[in-house]
Image 1 (cartoon, rainbow, N blue to C red):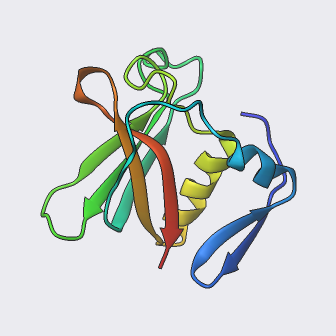
Image 2: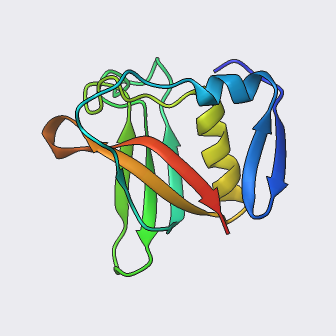
Length: 128
């Protein structure tokens, strides 16, 4: 992943990005018949990001583990690779998730189904 300088601003409990990073984050994916499912606010537990040299990269580019508010077990949401073909996160969005986890923010994930029942991240919102 190339190093990029991003301007991150905390506005009313949500992270905003500016400049070129905002343009990249706002790029829309191609329209698909399936509508994303928006999940309730959840607590982020861990973030795993795989590099191209990782043995599992073809299967998975990364995953976010969350602790749902109303349940007593964690859930894993993925992006990229054969598990979530066509459902990748930009470097900017991975950085936002990382910053959100570091700042103990809540996440509201938008998902679509992937291969083998994988729950794939197609969007998210961060807040407190």
